[in-house]
Length: 483
Image (cartoon, rainbow, N blue to C red; front, side, top):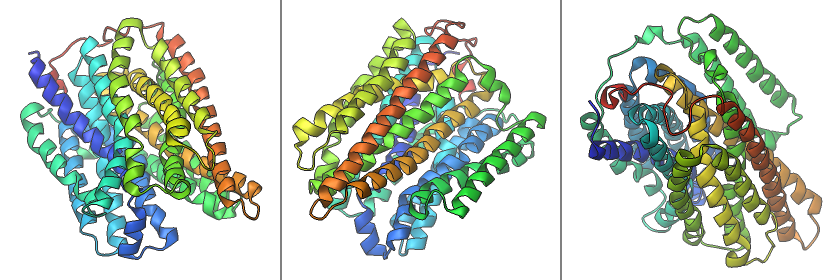
């Protein structure tokens, strides 16, 4: 039985709400970090883990969360993830010590890793044909705007009721999602038992990703040539090799390698990694520029990102219509190029700049590129994947995005630091700092440009399969398949 338009809309709102929470929490704490440090007596070294601890567990457990959704039930894993996310948010908001807050942030990441791929696989299974393209457009818009909204809300809440509300804000929306889900999405008959899950594969890939992301977050501080840094990179690589060997032999592999044989899936995931390697500078370096160089307050810095959030919300639904009408090629290629153009513009930030002339045009170009590119890349990475593997495909593209963010942050922080040190001179501290930011934006623009070239490969491979306006899978009752 086909779902009514109203029911489809409500399902989409629930899934978009979950994705909004996941992306929001990647950035909402950034503006609040100084307040958190004072309140809970964080050391400067440990403070970074308030942000990176969430990213670490989120990236590390995404593939496990996606495969668990396929085998144990998408609705079941989705609701378990959102409940864990709510509990961790409440705990973090009530934290009385730095260890308590860090533990809550790690738990938030695990909850996000469960609900994010489950939500995307629920969406791709619930919508077909043109409705699927529209749904992905709205989903991409909400997810893309979540990062910018996090900076805005972080400023508003920190300047208003206090830093604890950057965590408490998740609770009411999370409970609304929990209450609405059972009545909208039917439970799926359990496809497998917990013991059927590829636990050796889960242990290997989660360990590899955790070690990789952890090493990337600390390498700029301890040094890329440090023996421990090199050893940890080698360890992560070996774990990935053992993981691939395990997947070849496993009866129910965590990541079916056949997924990569589908046209465009592998290249789309590489493009996703590159795109998100370029995303971080917009939030990280621009926030630092506005607050440390231009002396914006937390609230004013948050408001400065409104054009980015609004632009993505406006552009992304249009991108889904373009995909439905002209195919993925225009948006897959043009999106990263527009993103690169905005980053090149931001690479000329002056030490004493104007928001209207030096920041806003770049933000608008980034918004156009993000709105076009993110929707298209999710579509390309999940299209044509068998429904039984929808969760793992969603987990894979989410993993590429999160690992890309971590790689981008580590590499670009190192680039910015090296450039600042090279420009350092007595009486020119601000100029040297801004020079580091500018160099980071320029390298990020190169990442986005390469993502456009990789997307061209995806387009060529996709030309061999069906048109974007139709599904490669036969239609099925959405209310049953979705869960």
